[in-house]
Image 1 (cartoon, rainbow, N blue to C red):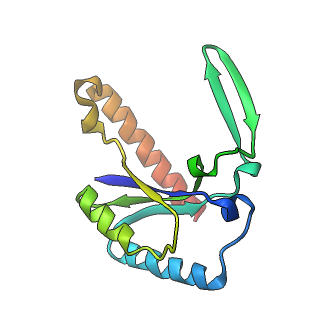
Image 2 (image 1 turned 30 degrees about the vertical axis):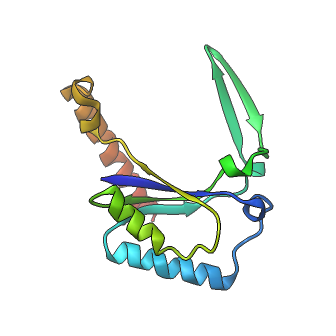
Length: 142
C-alpha cells in the first residue's frame, strides 16, 4: 500500500520562514530511517503558496488564480510518499516524525486494482508504461 503523507502549511511556512539547522537535521535523520526501512518512495517540501497558482475548471473555461492563498490550514507545505503494509504502519511511522506542532494528513494512494473492471487490460498496460517512463526520467535526473 502506498500512502501520501501531507504536511500542512502554517503561518511560518507561508511566510517563507525556512527551518533551522536543528530541525533540518532531525528531519534528515527521520528520512534516513524511512529510507533504510524501505518505506520512503519520495518526499519534498514546497515553497509558499505566494509562489504558486491554482487553475479553476468550469466546463471548457480555465481560470488561473495566483497565490498567495488565504487559508493556511488548507495548504500543503510538503509531502512524503510511503510504501507500507497498512494505514496503521503509516500512522506508526508518522508518530515518530520530529514535528513539535501542527497536523499531518495520511491518504492512501489508489492502485490499479482499486478501479476494478473499469481499469481494462489496455489501460493497465498503458499505466505500467507510463510508470516505467517516469521511473527512467527520475533516475536520469539524479
